[in-house]
Length: 85
Image (cartoon, rainbow, N blue to C red; front, side):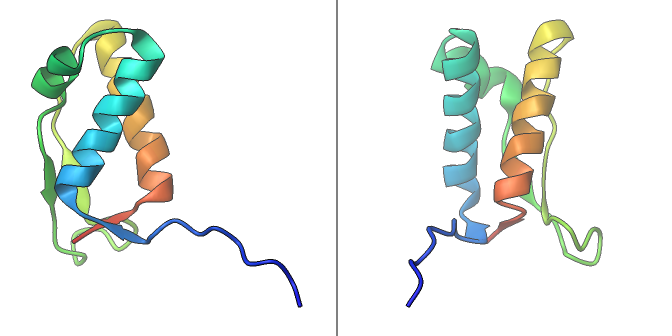
């Protein structure tokens, strides 16, 4: 019998996803949790009819290098957690 694989949950709560994004950004940049919470904004659930590949969005207020970091974190998080619920 094969080994079981650790598979991440397909659905995550929006608040948990926000925490994950902030942790990723804090760890990768060294900037404060407060900074990233302010520029990241909130994870907003969207209907699957809008985009079947993912049902959430974030509208960050970051600019420049911060914007790039946020977009990369979102890209990584969306790959692992495409759905919130």
